[in-house]
Image (cartoon, rainbow, N blue to C red; front, side):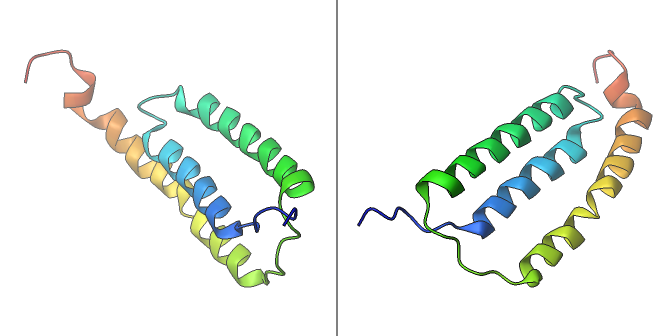
Length: 100
């Protein structure tokens, strides 16, 4: 009754992926996203540590499959930064101030 909710690791990984890929997709066009992402990941880390230590039950034993799949997915984030950043910096319509 007083044990608290179960710790759902897959929701935490999805939040990290969402923050990372959104920042990498649009960070070149809106550089303020990089400090915002850093701040949100720091706050996310601190709240997760608090939840693990004080609120949630002992997390279930996960194997390496989920962790390895997230790391393999995160390897594509720099490519999003490079390709979408190149497009944003080389597109004349995004740079110019003329009415289209």
